[in-house]
Length: 107
Image 1 (cartoon, rainbow, N blue to C red):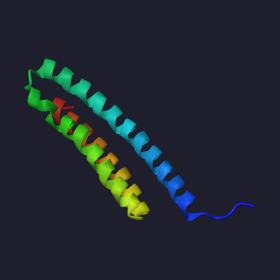
Image 2: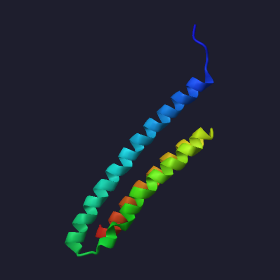
Image 3: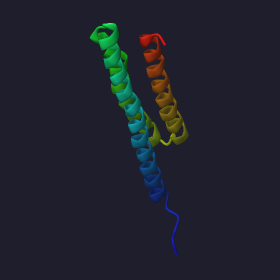
């Protein structure tokens, strides 16, 4: 007969959370990569400076910091808040990148 174990449930929930974080990091970095390619093409076409890369690089380095903070939040037993923050900041980063690109090329 199996017994209920809070420790095993906590470790299992943490593992699922970390897998979700890796999945979201791959999604956000996919958008970062496409944004880097788009900025490279717009630099060549519109003769922009390399400062156009700055918002994309900011997202590339800021989102892992968000993931670190949400992991600390999750370990402090603020699980739902950590998931909300992680998903919210992923959507903010993606919308920010595409808003930046639309302003950059003047679509």
